Each structure stands twice: as C-alpha cells, then as structure tokens.
Image (cartoon, rainbow, N blue to C red; front, side):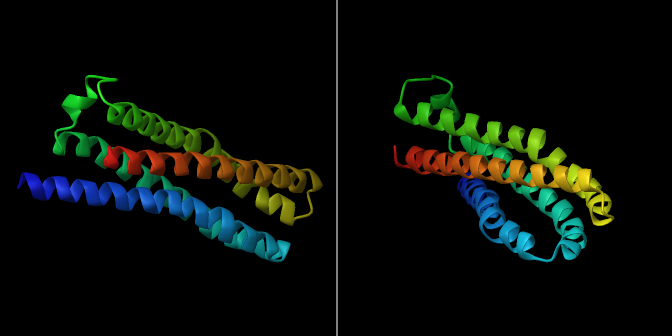
Length: 168
C-alpha cells in the first residue's frame, strides 16, 4: 500500500502542478488575447462565464498541488531530510519550491481573485457607457496581465525546483 500511495501522491502532485502552471500559460497566451480581440459588447458576457470558473479551477488545482506536495514529503519519507535543513542541496531546493508555491497561491488569492471579481462588477457599467468604469477595467486588465507574467515566472521556477529536487 505504501508504494501505491507514494506513486499516487507523486502523480497527483505533478499532474496538478502542470494543470496549475499550464492554466496560467493558457490564460495569458491564448485566452486573454482572444477575449481582448472580441468586440467590446461580447467581452462582458464571455468574461462573466469564464472568470468565475477559471478562478475556481486555478485555486482548486493549486490547492491539490500544495496538499499532495506535503503528503508526498511524508509518503516518500523525505520529511526527515527536510526537517534537517541545509543538510542536502535537495532540502534547500525543495524549501525554495515550497515557499514559491505557497507564495504564488497567496499572491493569486490576494491580487488576482479580487481584481477579477472587480472586473466582473465593472463590466455592466462599462457596457452601459460609463467611461470611468471602462477606464478602471482597462487598468485592471493591465494589472492582471502583469500579475499573469509574474505568475508564469514563479510557476516556471517552481517547476524547475520540482525537477531539480527529484534529480538531487
């Protein structure tokens, strides 16, 4: 049973991490440009359908990644190595990966989620001709794009840490 649990945790951890970081790449590279290319009148209804689902998706796969990562420490028996920090390069790399992953999750919760819901609340006002709402929406979209790029850099570093830790 121990080997099956370890294998399951490792699979779920890596799979969820790929979905989490890959979802960020897809959003920034495909979804946002496609949405911005749509006529302004069409953006609101589409965004209203996509954004809540996307936020829920990203948060759930991030949470699965974090939980299975911690369970993986116990399943592999590496928690003992991790509890003696700096004894191996593995613990430093893994520690950095864990801090980056929890930091990225906190960053998304603190910035992306509220900005996205603010964007959704401004949509009907901007569609009704409110120039201030439209200007605020444009600023939020730019902020979300910037946060997306930051997420991709952090996500890439997390994946690099995952790969490096497994090879050390």
